Image (cartoon, rainbow, N blue to C red; front, side):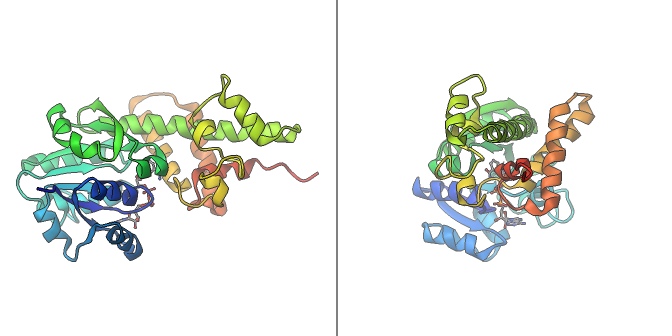
Length: 304
Ligand code: NAD
């Protein structure tokens, strides 16, 4: 029998992830504040639900892929914030599994886990890496927090959306791993932009320089798969006006989580803090909804 899944949050990542579950035989009912997002799931063979609490109550698995902590807390814990008032934790049937794939604060993951445990439900924080291409191709990396037994229970479902599954530790550990990874990604993106712009300002072709660096010691994910310079790579946000992809404001949120974690643990993150401020200024200049590689624009040379 097909696994009944409720998937909440059908944005740049959630929609292709949900479509992979549909393609691989699950019965997926989707919810999103945006009706066109739900319509795309329906076109791909999923279902639109009318009553979210009723659909959650009938689901074997509830997956969330929402922007930030507050959306996850509202959706899973409800207005009371404790799982007892209108959220999916309260609505879920006995034995259901909750998987939050959003990138949020580790404290949010632990609050959800506490509320789920109070109802005897299994839950995991399982944020992802791999971008929209990884979500579409089913090649995401999952960084999982929760018990090893719950990870084994979730494995067949996660494997329909991703290829690498890591058990980072207990509840919240998946989110901590994701925060560290994205801080490094934010720093690398800024570094790649700086280097490409420096090369261009000194007469180099951006594509040639990117190729050289991608095969030299400056090599990294941005240069290999997500070049920020328009026209260097096909099928990346830079080559479609920085639309789709991973929003500046989402990167800003993740770098803010890194700073909170650093303050709370007395860790030093000078480059992470600098990257946060650069993305903050970029967002304030009006780029919040563009892909994060659009920070390339802030390194444009002053006209002579
Ligand atoms: P997105 O903004 O494209 O999608 C979020 C979706 O959630 C939107 O469609 C929005 O309408 C919906 N939503 C918001 N509140 C809702 C609610 N209460 N109920 C139902 N739907 C609601 O964001 P995204 O790029 O898909 O990212 C989702 C999460 O994954 C974020 O936490 C992000 O940091 C993380 N992430 C994104 C990427 C990426 O490359 N885009 C990669 C890894 C992780």
